[in-house]
Structure formats: C-alpha cells, structure tokens
Image 1 (cartoon, rainbow, N blue to C red):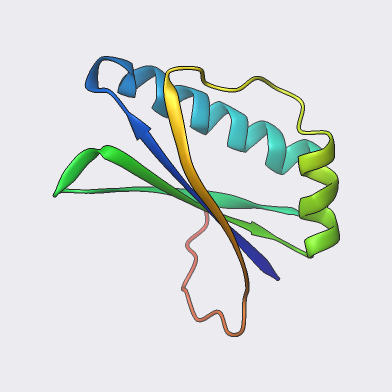
Image 2 (cartoon, rainbow, N blue to C red):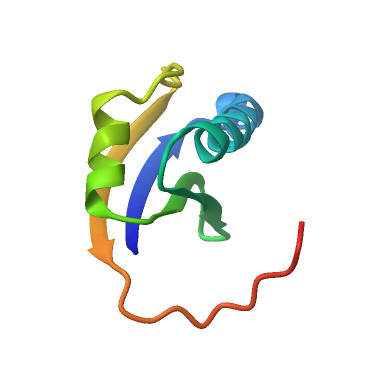
Length: 98
C-alpha cells in the first residue's frame, strides 16, 4: 500500500467550499479509480488554514495512473503546499463501517 500526503493552505472564506470539494472528489475517486482506497482529511487547532489529506492507494502504479488522468477539477482557492508519497509498512488502524 502507498500513502500520498497532500498539504493545502486555504483562506477562511473558502474553507467550507474546500471541504465539500475534497469530500465529493474523494468519494468520486474512490469509486472510479482503480486502486484508490480512500482518504482522510485533517486540520490542526494551531493553524485552521492548513489542511492535510492522507490518501491510501493499493500501489504506486495506481497512484501514478490517477495523477496521469485525475479527472475532476482543481480547487483554485486552495494552495497545494506539498505532496509526499510513502510506502505503508504496517497498518493497525481500526476502521469502523461507514
């Protein structure tokens, strides 16, 4: 498994729209892109303008295929600060059914 960590900076007046964009995009990606395993969106109390998404992919090739043909649209009011790709070594998170 692969984890892609995305960091965005979003002004307060655009945050509600950003949250909807991220949620709807993640649902679409998870249901339509081979190897997509979902994502988690986080923010810190210390900086509410900073968002981190941790996406899970079955393989680097699946992630690369998505990046080559992502579909959807970018959220123009968010600044993508960084992207980091890491290999998942162990996964012990308890996942409750949605």
